[in-house]
Amino acid sequence: MGVAGCGKTSVAQAIVARLGGCLIEGDAFHPQVNVDKMRRGIALTDQDRRGWLDRLVQELAAAQQGGDHAVLACSALKRRYRDRLRAGGACLGFVFLQLPEAEALSRVAQRVGHFMPDSLVASQFADLEPPSAEALVLTVDATLPVQAIAEQVAHWYARIQSGGNKSD
Image 1 (cartoon, rainbow, N blue to C red):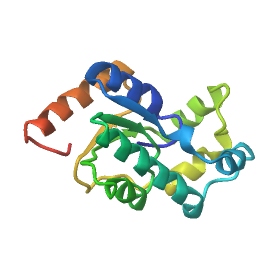
Image 2 (tube, rainbow, N blue to C red):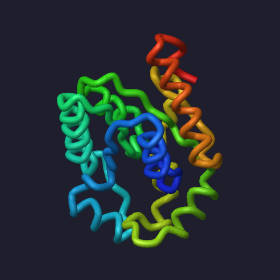
Image 3 (cartoon, rainbow, N blue to C red):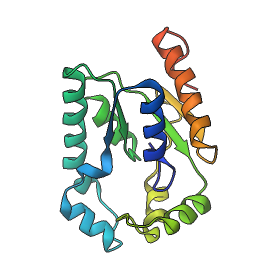
């Protein structure tokens, strides 16, 4: 989880490659009206995100019912969004990809073919509620190489599975 440009998709792909499971790319489940809004540089509201979050909960539940370990790449900027995802029934942990705003702006400006313009980066930081006091959260420096982040996540996940420290 994290703001636009923090590397959610790349990190999620690396985690799936390392640990297995299925990737759920949150951006793929935005309704077209949300995508159109973002393309026009209009930030999404809590109301805009409600149906999207509900769809992600359904995808997580379907993966769990199918016996799959799901890795979800999703902004989940606010605590209430993360709580909605947690309410889906699965034991859900979050990897917070922490990134300075200037770096996020630079990365988003360089992306090609994505609907999220760099003009919305500031709104992402305005909405961001870091998950500092929440259970099952690992905070990582998103400026690290993707494989280094995936390694941190793998070690954290192994500790969770063995009943060790659940938040770092």
